[in-house]
Image 1: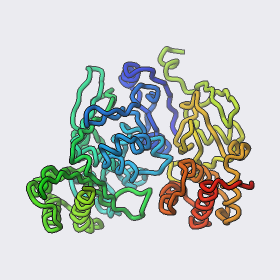
Image 2: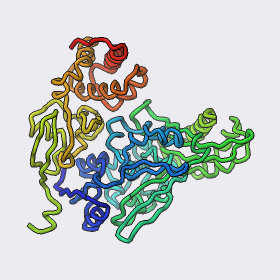
Image 3: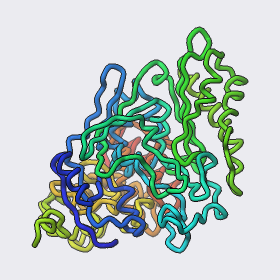
Image 4: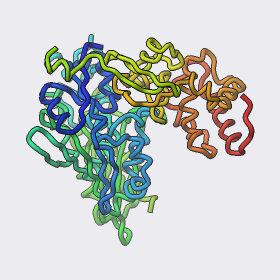
Length: 325
Length: 171
């Protein structure tokens, strides 16, 4: 690991001031420490934000609000989360291992870096690690890579599961920076790689995530997360789908769908949603709507299987959500 | 020393408890918890395997939760309560599990065992009789590269059953 310095922040103001002086925030450290050891991340200064009062999990009406430092395991086991947002809990449990879930903060989870192997391989070109060096994955081992939102510069998927749930459920986040606070949809946190794959999120310099708010509702209570992967646990998604449903009088009144493992960011499937409104949730309707997810997909040499797997995963996730009724 | 150097130190003083004993130390900020325990305190129970948070050999307990010791900086642990396999062996908290691991041949080289014991103790602490699927899920972040998992699951299942029945455990 390269030399660095560490400071502890006692308040968000302290933390933001340190960040303005060039420090990177560290919370659970599960991504950052790992990548610092690899010398993929090379911060000279860290500011530890774990002492900040951003750990609470609270209910406001049917909405759930998670402090940015709430741990994955705490949120996943919280009775109000299980009652009001089972999709959030399920997506968290399907990610990482118990040890990592105990450490990783929800804010850090959203900002985790990609799992493309070339990102960590110093002898392979990677535009994320070294802008302008090229993308080894384009013609390399790209079986796990994205089919949506890719560019000639980068084809890595966003690895978070809970981010997929948040995007499906229209979650918003509140951040504070040197110029004050702002709120925006979690979906807008993520940038497409385009020509600047080293820029992954839309936070401004010094901005600190304060909390994530997930709106509740009947559809949020009837929602599931299906994660398809190479082994049953402790593995990233090949394809995943978050599906939330509200069915009234036998037809779909509200539906939310987002997918992981297929996009360079968590991918909301609005065309699928629109096709389902007002229709009965039968297998034929679900399958027909799920196929609309394929619009704009661009498979690589080794990930064609995702073209079949994606609509199947969406249809099955919707069925699973329907079975909760 | 400039103000900046003081507010961004490369070595920090920490006070924590390790296996119930108070420890004061000055550590490099880059020292991770497992190196701190092994190299500075001589507690070699937590193993440094992949040092990427993947293999689980470094699993130990911080403030009551199992964590990856290799992804935690010692400098961040001021005030923390750390337990290693040495400490929990001394208290006897793992005695029935350790006996079951031996009984069931749930270890061969033993490199993963301290971490595996912590993951096992964690699911057992939830009480009741977890299913084999739930046990597998809970130890999925702990890699064994020689014995395999069948015997480990057997051992954990056995202890869960014995504890649920309130049986006296022999160490």
